[in-house]
Amino acid sequence: MKKEIFYISNLISLSRFLLLGVAAYFLLEKNYLFSCIMIFLIWVSDLLDGYIARRRGEISEFGKIIDPLADKVSIIVIVVILLIQKIIPPWFVIITVSRDALILAGGLYLNAKKNIVLQSNWLGKMAVFTIGLTLFLSIFANGAQIGQFGNFFSYHNEITELLIVVMLFLSIGMILLSLVSYLKRFLENI
Image (tube, rainbow, N blue to C red; front, side):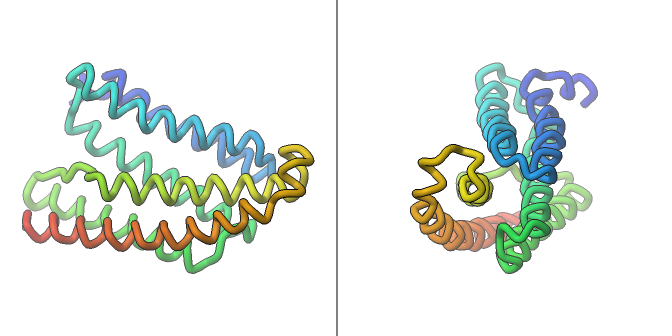
């Protein structure tokens, strides 16, 4: 397990915690431009770690834990900050955090009782992607509204706001589908 920590793919997963700290700082400072850049880098690192793990044959038990954990921590930290800043609605935060808490609890149970680590599936990855895109667009729209992205986006913010509403509901749909999928896999393994 100690050797697995130093796999390039796992180091990239771990780097997401550092990127998240920087993103959280910029969010709290209401510097939405740099927040968007950091969140984009978090997303790229999420894609990159999985690709490198498969390409280099570095798929490991540590990676199966740290990658989804980095996703969950990133989403929870960002949604809580956006809730505090009143950028996203409380109901979205409750649903998003509840999903992650349920999946984490089920994963910990399976690991403790059966020594099984459930890997993310494509529905889970799509749910994380839609949640992430929703959060990114919410931050972007807020920054555009106060002029941090130039005049064009300040004047055309209504398109982004409509897209955010669509993404909020698409995210909820993906959250529900991924929860059903995880529940099914959980029940098959207990």
